[in-house]
Each structure stands twice: as structure tokens, then as C-alpha cells.
Amino acid sequence: MKQTNLSAVVLSGGQSSRIKVADKGLVELAGQPMIHYVLHNLHLHLTDISISTHTPQTTYQQFGYPLINDQYNDYLGPLAGIHAALSHAKTQNVFIVPCDCPFLNTQVISERLSHAQQQHQARLVVAHDGYHIQPTIALIDRVLLDSLEQYIKRGGRRLMLWFKEEQALEVDFSDHKDMFFNINTPGDIEQAEVYLNSQYK
Picture 1: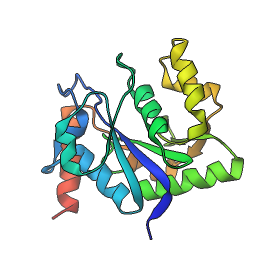
Picture 2: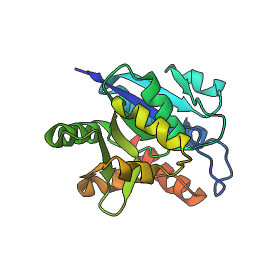
Picture 3: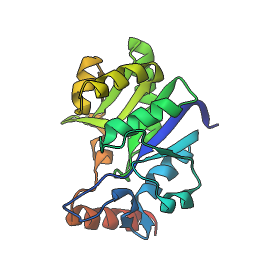
């Protein structure tokens, strides 16, 4: 049974100078755009899935999921994507994931984040891979929309600072740290393709 009381939003449109692309989600890995793997994993356990974009990207229509456009003209990165996600949410909580982590087990992550949120009555919970916080992998209560809008209006631009202000609860995933591998360099692409080709043979 797929979960129906949770919305998932994939943050796309991230730029990368090191791999010279304007949209990391469309970088091809083992014959598929990178975002395909994240969407596939989400589809296995959730019904409400959307893609957040900075600018309208007709290419993303091919995946068949609703597109959510940022409401800010200035490029605010994931802050704007999260703001758009909370603005369009039909559920109380929104599960945020990035487009450049093709190995995420989104079901494991969402279930553990949800459990921690309920146990601690937290409004914002974020994944920690054992080394670093993963700020674009989080579960956020939509009641924080007003807080985020106020943060942006007063000039806030750092996602981690807003998390700190909201006393985000860090959830340990050190037992699954390998799935947080993300794509930042041509070498990362090669490494990811070796793994994906071995999995899909």
C-alpha cells in the first residue's frame, strides 16, 4: 500500500559549474536522466509527488508529475523550492528530496523522519548521514510556510540558518550513509554509472 498522507517534492534545477550543466536533474546516468531514479524510488511508496523548478522546464513534463514553479524571481536555490513546495502542499507534512542523489531509499528516509517527527513533536526534521547534515532531505510541516516567507523577506538566504532558527531535529542515517552519494563532478557521474549499470543488468 502506498502512503497517501505525505507529499513529496523533488528539488530540481540545481546548477553545477563542475559538470558544466544548468540543470543537474537532467544529467544522464546509465541511459536515464538523474531525476528519474529519485522519482522511481518515490513512486514505489507515495502517491503525491511533484517536481519543483526554478524556471519552467518543458523537459520535466515527460515524467508525468505536476511541476511547481518558484514564486521568487531572484534565484534563491533550495529556499525557493521549499517555499513553493509548502505553498502547494495538500498534506500536513512535505517530504523534500534533491534530484542529484540517485541512490536514495526514499521509503527508509521518509519513514524514519516521520517517526522522529512524531516522537519529538518536531515541525522540521532533517537527515544526517553521520558526517554532515543533508539539508535538502527533510520533512517539513507546512505550518512553517509563514516562517520561511518572513525569513526570505528579511533577507535570509541560507537554508541552514533557517533550519537553525526553527530548531530542526537531526535524524541519524549513518547506517545508510552510502545512499546519500550525490553528483557534483564528472568523476561522480562515472562512479554512479558503474553502480547503476551493475544494478540494472
